[in-house]
Structures are given as structure tokens and as C-alpha cells.
Image (cartoon, rainbow, N blue to C red):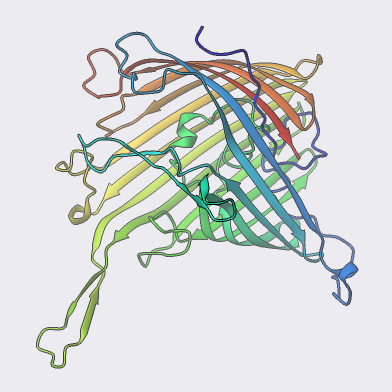
Length: 432
């Protein structure tokens, strides 16, 4: 074996340091509605009366080793086992009053240092280097990283069945995207269909959500209005169409905890360029600014999910479909630089089964995935099977080991990436 001794990776849950040992409910406390307090809003007449700010977060640390046969089409994927710190996520949560709360989540990154880019097909791959001189340390070299804003919103809780979030929020669909903290989830890596973002991972706009309960059954809903998906959708909408989305949830506790959900998203993606010129026939000249569309398509995403927990047993599955239809005059240009993209539909599913034993929080699990890349000219249709072990010795610490076998297409497939991929991962985790 070329990989070093087993390392463990640290992942932390979205929950607080008081998270329970059982698997978290879908829609955790950070994502769901704030619980109204009986306390009156503070008057801020003194520092002691000001809102308190809670800081917490999670980290994950992973060792990964690809096992590739000779002549594999994935030979450009690193053969060498590597350690990495993948997620360093920090939360700042504030209860502003009995009705208002604020939540900001950021991820600290080593990127863009070390990332690869290619200007055009066939051109050399260039590795980004962020090395600069540190003026506080005699100009010695320093490598800087970036920050990703995961979400930042203000929430108003009107009552149990109605709350509003204003700002950037995680798209309310499925299971994995909502409970996205590395130790909260069972496996080491997200299922491929989640990573492919058939739904937007997050949106900027307004979300309404709420729930109510009758006997052993609870009902919940989410409605979203946002900029939709786009090249700068965090702060700018490049067309006159707002994206709409929704989710409904039913949970029953008659036999364990059974949760069923259905989600949808509909929006238009638009990219534009800006051109400056002169208004014809004007003297003195007048500036003319235009913003012609370069790419535009509408997309519809639909999803269904299931999660059943009963006496240590966990069954979980999501199926997602995304349809993309281009405006004919604004079709995207594929990597070849010549071929225009065609309309297509993508479909994926995964299923997870695991059992949490009473011994040291050990859970053996298995994940099966299937994904159709549709009109993709590079990746073939994929299926994968992962076998793993999730160990939770205490609520805020998780250790994981996982072996994944993936098969893309067949020998006769014309796509560039096809064949078998084997990967071994170890992960250790903590929440703080």
C-alpha cells in the first residue's frame, strides 16, 4: 500500500456542542425556525442587555487514496495519498429578540492556491499560486486563502407555522443539502447528484417556512423567491425573472421517525456582457452602454426524499431530476469551443442504509449512487457503491472510513472519462 497509516478526519455537525448521539432530524436547529422566547426584546440600555452572539463551527480532516489500475482514463487524478483539511466552517448566531434572529455561516478556504485551470481545450493546465510577501515578517513568503459565504440571513418568527428568512439561505430541498455539516451526515463525501447541484446549493432572496403538528404527524413547508441561478446571483439578477421554489415535508413517529419530502425549483439562468460605445450621430459624443445576453436557459428541478430511523436503523434516499432548455439564440458553447449545447435532462438517485450499534456509537453503512450525465460529452453515465464505518464516540466527535467503487460507462463509450475508479478515504471530526 502506498498510503500511510490510517488517519482520521474531523467533521463537525451543524448542531451545537450539545448535539445528541442520534442522527439529527431533517432540517436541524440552525436551518429551521427559531423558537420564540417569552422574554421581552432587549432595550440595549447597557452592554449586559445587548443580544448575545454565539460562535461555533466544525472542521473535517481527511486522508484520501485513489487506487487506479494501469491505463485507467482517470490517470490524471492524483495517485498519491494525501492529507487535507476540507471544511473549516464558522457560525455566528445571534438572538436579536424573541422574534428575530441572525445567522451567518462562512467557510475558510486554502483556495484558490493550488487549484488548476485551463484557458482552452488542449492548452496546458496552470496551477494557481497565491504566494505573496508578508510585510509583517521581513517580506517572507505567505500563501493566502479565501472565504466562501455559505449563508447570511435575518429571520423573523411570526408563529410556529410562519417564519421569514431574508438574505442568503441554503436551498430547502432533500436531506443532504440541509444537514450539510460533515459530521452530521453519515458518509465522508456528498453523493454525486448533490455535488452536481441539480438544485442550486444556496439562493439569495426571501424564504417563508413553518410547521404544525397533529398527534404523531408533523407537516412542514418552505417557499422561496430569489435571484435564481446565475454567474453573480449572490448579489445581482441579470434578467427580469425571479426563481420560485418550494418544499413540503411530512414526518410521522408511529414507528420510529419516518420523513417524506418533495421539492421543486424553477428559474431562468442568464449571463450577459457589457459593451461601451458611442451613440451614432451625436456631437459631442454620447456614451452608449449595452448588455447583450450571452447565455440563457430555463431549468426545472424536482426531487423526492425519504428518511426512516428506527431503533438504530437508518434508511435514507433522494432522487433528483433537472431539465434545462436553452433559448435558441443564447445556447452555451461546450468545451470544444465549437459545439453548441443541446437541451437535456439529468437524473440521479442515491440510497443509504446504516445501523447505529450500541457499542461506542459504531455504524456500518452502505451507499449506492446512480447518475446520468445526459448531454455531457466528457463524463459517462455513472454508478457507485460505497462501504463504510461511522464511529461517534461522543456527540461532537466522528471518525469515518469509506471505500468507494465507481464505474463510468463502458469500454465502448466514446466519452473521455469512463471506466473504473476506486477510492479509499479516512476522516476524523470535531465540532466546537
